[in-house]
Length: 279
Image 1: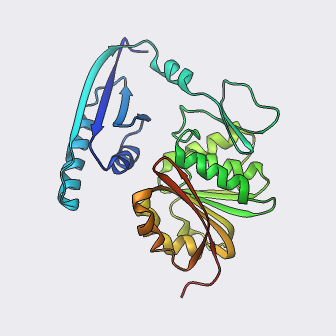
Image 2: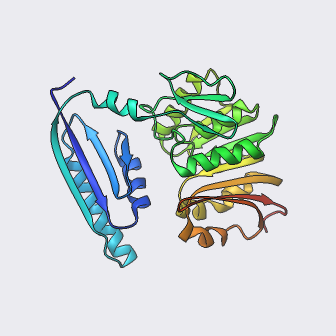
């Protein structure tokens, strides 16, 4: 371990979810989210990430015709094993039938346990979109269901469904996410029926349940693919939606019926059903 590490604190005035997507897609390390932005830590200097964020901010401002304030502050700090400090900050939590805990904590004998190593992926259940998605899975996924987790990330949603004895496939356009999902499944002594790098359009199967915890814009872009993957009468769980974009997303799912709306803070998860074939 090196003597020093670098900490980059990023603050943005708006469009935080788009900056989070940018960081997820472009950096090979994890980051922490805060109310105002993000914190990135690495044993290597983070100047390139700062430059990339500035370029992304300029492109967003031009595309959206609005002003976005960005503040990046990098510090060189004494290395006191920040990975260990970060691990200590991750606490177990119970969500409906599930108990999500880091690998170094004990299981809960009264709930369905899901072990997640935060060093491997971002999805630990603490974010409102993950928590509400787990709640929907707990309620709507039944034993023997077929399910696809689109944009699987850490794999936590698919793992939860497998623990409910569903047959689960998963996909993500990010190869690191696919690798992390496989690793987290192994931590839980289970495996996906099938998992691949790419979109759900690569599958010709129809599923009882389709889950997509992504972001609002992507949910609109892939709406046709998600609905095509769903059996008639099946359940579609959409998450990662800021409430101000909810009506925009629903505009692409007019042929579906809303079963339930789950709101936590400013985040919304929609549970829909498909009653008729797309025309």
